[in-house]
Image (tube, rainbow, N blue to C red; front, side):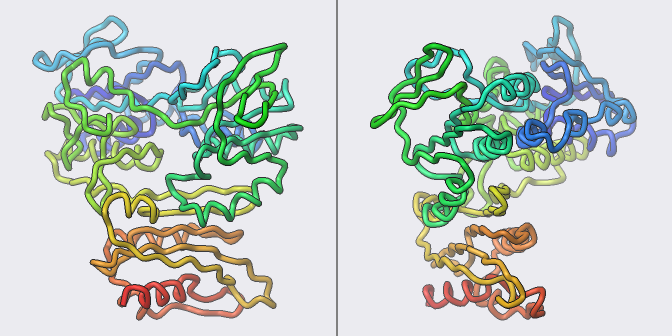
Length: 437
């Protein structure tokens, strides 16, 4: 079997490895326009901060060599001829039995008047973005980050860690709005401001101009002058190649796939940031541009490609976790705002509880739980603490995925030790049950 994979990001890499595991004889060709195998966009901030090196986050070339996967660097796939089952890449023709589209996404540039490309940067899986920032960050001492998604927050932390005199974080509606409701996001506002970042919320940008070596950002009530601007305002799925091949695009702008991640052409699968997916709670169509989603969809597309649609994709839970100036922030499922937008009748509780006995040096766990009144199950959760929260978020994710009734959850026996602590969310679960009853 001949398999061609368009894109060498997390989805393409995951797919190539799984195909080789399942089919030792398959001929696998993977194509990327980049001149190096990339990385997840959440990792470059740690390189730019000086925590790790580029070599430590690049996907190792030996991974492909050991698996006899042919990598075509600096090679753009320009055409898909579906009836002939071949692609054109770098001016050459390659036939395929099965094709995986994983071209990723490109940063979205907001329509701010005055943007001219001078000292304006983005950060994506394109290695050139990281290299460009690596060169300019040491030269300057002030910057404005526009957008407060994960990349915006990570880069704000990076600039603060590099000792910048002035770091502005311009937020239009809310910090990490895709994952946190306003009541939880507010808990981070003071944390960010206390660490040398000027948080401007809400920020209405009237325009940006380049003048005397500075970027001047016009707000409704003031003007900011900084050395450079970093735009972290989301990304748009790369679907141009699919459109050219007349592969169906979904309502959200991603490539339409069935439960096996198969496109409108049964011999072509898709994975990663280019996809239109669905959330596993309501089934509504959405997009989720995260490295974890890319990796899992790449793996599932590969399994189905080789084994004949054996593994359905169950949808996304919107898992998320990040560290912000010593606080861990995690979320899973729907925010209360989004749940209501999707038509759910929900109730919520917000709690702040010590993680262990106060005299034993406990930290506070701030959390919010959101439940569907009709089903009596959790549909969303948000957690903020100086403690490690990954385990709590993972447990909440399993609870939501398996639709465990809250009454059942409240009856589960949980461990306790004065030094280690107790169940951190039990009180919130019981409080949510009282709201539902």
